[in-house]
Amino acid sequence: MTNWKLQLAAVVLVLSGAARGQEPSPAQAIALEQQGKLAEAAQVWRAVTKRNPKDAAAFASLGVVLSKEQKYDEAASAYKKALALNSKLPGVQLNLGLAEFKQGHFDAAISPLTAALKMEPKNMQARTLLGFSCYGAKRFADAVEPLKSALKSDPDNTDLHQILAQSCLWAKQYSCALDEFRQILERNPDSPAAHVLTGQALDGLGRTPDAIAEFQAAVKVSPHEPNVHFGLGYLYWKSHQYDDARREFENELSVDSSHAQALAYLGDIEMKQNHPEEALALLGKATRLQDDIRIAYLDLGTILTQQKRYDEAVAALQHAVKLDPAQPDAHYRLAHVYQDMGKTAESQREFAQVRELHEKADDLVRKMAASPPAPPQ
Image (cartoon, rainbow, N blue to C red; front, side, top):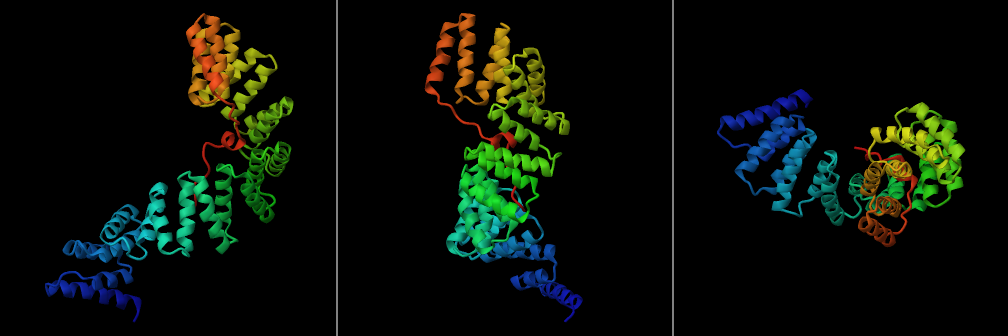
């Protein structure tokens, strides 16, 4: 039977039932769904659930139709009602997890996808979605194992390799990240992003010279790629190669004149090289563009203290402390400002903080991005 005849038969089935005073049935809803009449099918399923509000399968079927219409919020609500009636209904946990994932509700997707895997441990769709959802929810360490398992079944999946590599990187599992990025580079040796991410992993492993080499390769492949010159400059800065760092920060600013971090680190270099006025201009511009760069406020506080502009110095250093209270250097400098101002109690309080804190290492991953890219939908 041709498609138009099937569609006509489905409509006739519904209309004839209504004419006879029959209530909408699952058979009618299924027929409409098979013919692509999703809105009509959803309407029939709603009527079925209204007539029998304890029909878990009907709610689940309503969810499927709504998902096909990409009405994921309504679909998730239908799936939840189905599960409340029958938590063991096959496939519904997976469908709920997928509906939440499609909305970007990654945290909400994790629980049903975990339940789906318990019911079907070999379901690779559930395992992959769970890995992507943990990644999207920034639970990077939790994403690693399901993504590794998914890759065993689909080793050529580029998206999986990328998300696993990023998860390992943000979970500070640098050896895992390095393995994945090397595989990506084998497939595409001219990928600047892969060179950058490999460099970040190497930096996390403390292999800064090797990291610099990867960033140099990225710059060679794509000299106008945003953020690449900054990353290379930061590694030079970290290695106290300030002239090389300056060159790369300036190169970054030629790509993006409003790159706040490049301005801030240039300001830091000017301060270290005893050019306070040049440093103040750069640091001030950086903080006007972006108010969460800790080193900019730390350096401002230092220079303003040297210039005996104590109130301004205190404000800058307090902002640095607010951005990361666990770093002792801002507390230490603030203690000295208070000491110079004759505020003994405040100074002693800050020195006490310094004694309690331990140095916490920065890493390039968090310098170059506030968060990793979103998982594929």
